[in-house]
Length: 492
Image (cartoon, rainbow, N blue to C red):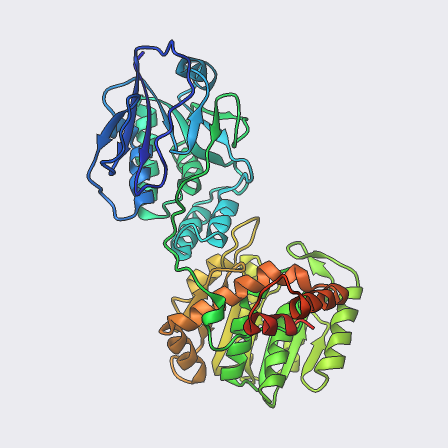
């Protein structure tokens, strides 16, 4: 049987690595490297110089990775491997284990960290692997079609294939998903296997980094389409006075402080508060900017299946902090959302934050129940629009509701935050439209939020904080800037 062992390297992402295989390499094994770099030379591989089809070098690689039946010469078997994979054994011994009988048509290694494409999509968003909106839309499509969560995930750095019609059909469907959706091929492969009812997959339970077949070598170049952001270039930083775990909301605190500062609401209502990261950012901005208004936290403070269940001490801590710092602003209502709504007059609320139970039905009910209480130009926040795990449905409801309310903006970091105005006029609508046109301000929210998320654990205990302040202020070893000192001072 004829076998091809191949890779595809573009934009100097990797160097061509010679495998550590036995000298008795089967004569029928052909070695191929596709590249756009004329400097790539090899006595071991047939280097094929190709013209780029895509500006995006990652998607260029994916074409050659996925469409083996079109890009390779006639063959029976193929092994695709990423450019940072170095094989240690003969090709024959690899195929003996990977594709060992007639029923196995395709083999890949089990993903080392996750077993769900929805979790993989969320991880790709957090790690800035691709445009978050593309990933969100793709995951939403899979969810709407009924693709199940925790249905397995594959690492696509090494692919063993038989060149048969069933595999060709599968790979064509896989490529179509990459073209129409995210370039992150690990998101789409489980879906197309499920969609095509593909039979013949073998999942190899091997160590992803190094195993008896290969070892991974670090990439020589990191690819990113995202701007590199320097936090200390921004004129104004929006930082919290209080921040506690869980950290899912902290990335939006800078935006929340800015929003309240500029919206200047008289009444803010939050549905779902837990430890108060979002609630106290609203209160902080009201106090700091001398806004004459009230902020209401509505929660049973018992927890739910998404947040987990917790003791009464959480409520007592929130209550104590509110009384000490925002007694004339903060109001805690310990009731079910559906009962608490009667305490508010119609068209009385300027800003509503929905962050309770995250199922589709629960979020829909929260919005529709509280809608009569909102002013005609109110702003509404929906947290967790980037979460697809379990039965989270905020993402689905958000996609539906923005068709009715076109003045909106989506943030995809920190589990995602959807922001909309009920009206196309008014202060809220103007703020959203101005923000969408101010990329530097958006970058400041994203970068500051990321810093808070990464540095947050440093500030959870006062003693640790005081020690860190002394280190920053007095150390002769650590060099820092006044701007960085300002960040630390906010957490005193």
